[in-house]
Image (cartoon, rainbow, N blue to C red; front, side, top):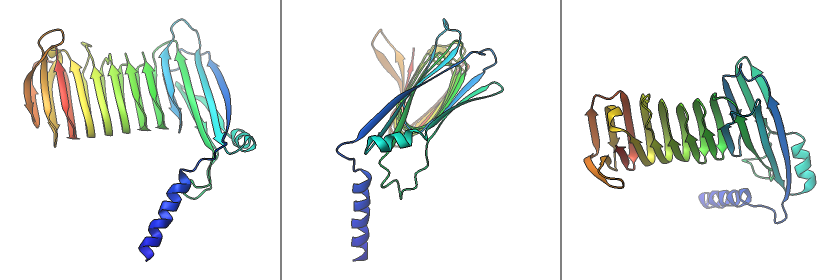
Length: 280
């Protein structure tokens, strides 16, 4: 009987946690900041909970520009306004590091129940010159273009990187797209997928470890040096370009080890899922 009561209690909690008022209020506002002393900035960090972020290169502009859209959803206009007044976007600079942090009121509710306020902050950050970027985010999509070394810690969301020097990613649930990688990438994920493409002659290393998902890497054949691929329950496949749209399978199995004359080290590991290395 006690176990049944406990089951109903947790079902009740689950119902309350997913309950949204029929007439939810929405408050939206914008945030803008420009940083003029660009030469001294070597990296930008962003710490947020909910919201998308987009870092992109804007060589024609003089300043680093931060634009954000703040959205608060709650049961009433008064509740949203009261919550919004306590939200802070802090932009600080410590030597060469520019830090952007979203601070929100702490919740005193039990397991988040009764806390019907939801906050999300979406960022658009344009930078005149490439810098290193670090993002710590719980829920949201991340897009980075033309940056230096990019570090991401994400729970839920998509990651898209284009033309970055390096990529270091830790994710729980994420579909990742990395194109035009220049030097190296290290990806550690639980669930999701990775599609990585690079033709850079300076590429040194590609490392990916997944629990559940699909890994696809595409590089020129001449770059491949030490290669290790292993999939516990799936398959590892090495394919070589045969024609414009045709690929021929060179090797297939649970584990593939190859040592060639290229300088790029590739290590791809998966527990549940397929690994495909496309060599052209």
